[in-house]
Length: 499
Image 1 (tube, one colour):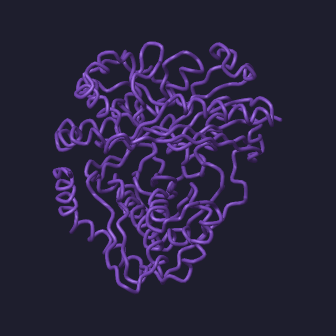
Image 2 (cartoon, rainbow, N blue to C red):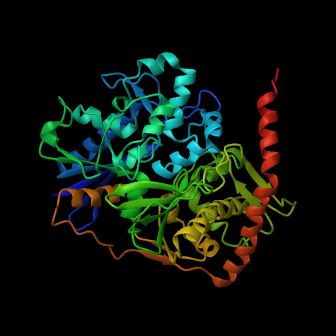
Image 3 (cartoon, rainbow, N blue to C red):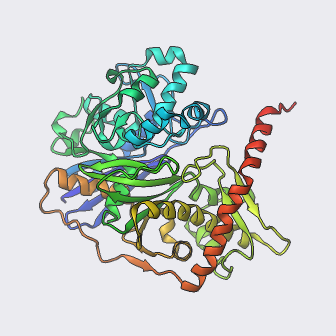
């Protein structure tokens, strides 16, 4: 069978999706790995486990379908691995969620240099940025910093294991805070701030860059000698491509562990206050938007830590959503700020926290869960409205991620945003986007890039949208009026030593 394999190297798992030349998903393989937090603010992973998951996915699908004609890579952004000259990690990988460099970010955020870096690199001034992770290593792990041969991402690590070369695609590079997104080269002011040089970073290449399977290192994937490998782009950019959200007036929303709102643009959309990100998909195409920290992870927290559900699976989630159908908009006067992991866009506040507001003795588990779903949708709408004010009207949202299987959640998103919600596919949009990018890069003429016709549309209810506009205004005001208290509480908790 002729097929293209898109592999999405995510924060919680690596997922491979096989698609034939008529755009049908014919196989899927997914393998998970843990994230460790040895200290507050840390988010670490073992790159070797991710490499093993990557290999296992390819091997499993090969055992069922034979070798792919092409493999294309998608990857989570903002990871950082300090490696030696043989690409051996000197420390565990820092994930996007690692915030140990937050104090360094605060030193830079309000400066003229901070605004220059944001405007020209497209990466928000935030602890997720590899730029600030490198500075943290220099200040806190000077021996490791001196011994580091290259500072790379997880995709660069896997590419090196495949081909023995340090390459980074423009898309992943554009999310490092170190790359000039207009000049397509490493940013000199960012390098000076980090106190590194270009030789300590990988060689940037277009997202269409590919290598032949015959060039694979040693005994790696011996059955792929006739397979082309396309370096691809970042997961967020490819999710727009894979969910057909590259036209004017169409946005993409993804909710997985975290979430994001994105649109495609022929130019960067710069707003230093809102910190809209601007990442590269391909030549003359930027994906602009804002990420949120708190998506499906918040619902998992509620079910595991509050409701004490031991086993979370499709059946338990269905039972949950079925039980929420009767809850009124606004959860009978209960608001929820979902900032359990701090928040990125649009508030960019690592010290923010989760808040239930309006609790009364009439509220039950259904109200708590419904308010959580509304809170996540409010946070996404906060990003969406800001993006719309800069980029123009948005009439349609194409959605991807695990939440799209819940009709109730999709209806909530439609009612809160007032937009038409379109689910164009169920399988991973980032992996599908990588496949589409590979078909273009390799000029696979037989590949049919088109919507399958299985898309589902959810329209907003006008009456509920009017109600939700009032609750959304309260949601925004609640954070504005409580953020000082959040910061004081954070400082108090940090200062107290418990015996």
